[in-house]
Structure formats: structure tokens, C-alpha cells
Amino acid sequence: MELRIQGIGTGGINPSARTVFTKLKSYFELLGNDQHILIRYISGMIAATNVTMLDEAASYGFDVADQLHQICTDLLDKHGANPEYHEYYTAISAKRDLFSIYPTESTVQSLYYLELFDLHAELSVNEYILRQEKNIREFAGLPEVGHYYEILEQKLGAAAKDLNDLLLEHFVCARVMDAFRQGMLNEYHYTLENVDPDTQQPIFQLWMETL
Image (tube, rainbow, N blue to C red; front, side, top):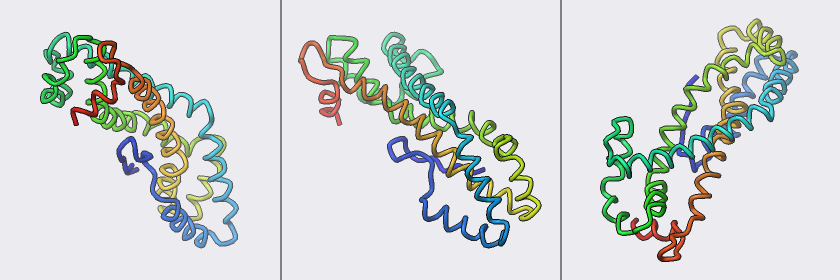
């Protein structure tokens, strides 16, 4: 399944509803009198993407965003000596002198965080997609949908796989990734609320002045 990953601020992976349902219409036409099977399959797939799964995705997104604070602390303390964070250190290098004028370490760390958030989000979303792909692919074997998928395979042959990938991307991946994205953004918004104790200015204002 090819998953189209966009920036974290754009809504994640999700082709337009018109595109998806235009494609779905062709499958409904192929099924003729058996269209109810596809309706039940889609309904089961949506139901299977339950609240627990979405809560876990949101929680993991929050944790991933929180990890960036640890990375920023490491960059400040070790000055890029950790090879695991080389990409982050390279990205922050041009702004280090600008940020270091503030005497409070938590302010500098927050500025690092905002500067590196887009990079961290991009790397984390791609990693999360790879982590979840196996779980998502197993949807066809779930009790709620497995029976209907077997019938669709009999009716549509090889086209059933393309149909399944389309449905997974639109009805499952998009919902899970939206929850993951929201978890990341929640932690990001907390950082935006920080205030530099020396200037009494919000962190986002200090960062904005460096753009």
C-alpha cells in the first residue's frame, strides 16, 4: 500500500473524498447485485478503527513530540556530539547564536523545539507509518471484515487488493494519522504557551523574530 504522507499541518495522509468515492463507485458497479457486501465491509472497517486505537495513536503522537524536548536538551548539553541527533544539530546550527543570547536555558530549549518541530514531525510521521503498516494491513483478517473481504476476493479477483488498499488508506490510515498528528500538535501548543522569564515575551514571539 502506497501511503501519501504530507506535512503534519496539512491533515496527514488522505486523498480527497471525491477521488476516493469516484473510485469506489466503479467497484460498486462491478459488484452489481452484490453491492451490499462492500457496504458491510466498509462499515466493519470503520467500526474496527475503534476509540482505543485512536487514543493510542494520539497518546503516541504526544509522546513523540515530547521526545523532541529531550533531543533539544541533548543538543544544548552535548553540542551535537550525539551522532543519533546529527540531522537535528545540522538543522539548528544556523540559529544557535541567535538563540544563545537568552540567558535562561529553558527559553533556549523552547526556541530549539520550535525551530526543529517540522523536521521532527516529518521524521516521526514517516516512522509511525512504517510501524503501523503491518497492523493496518491485518484489518482484512479481523472478524468484523474478514468474511466480507473473502467474498470480495471471489467477486473481484485481483482488484480486491487494490480496493482494500484504497479503503485502508481513506478509512483507517487517515483516522489513525489524524489522531497521531493531533497528539503531536497538543505538545507543540504547550510549548508555544511558554514565556521567557527575562523578557516576559511568549516564546513564539521570540522565535518569530528569528524567521
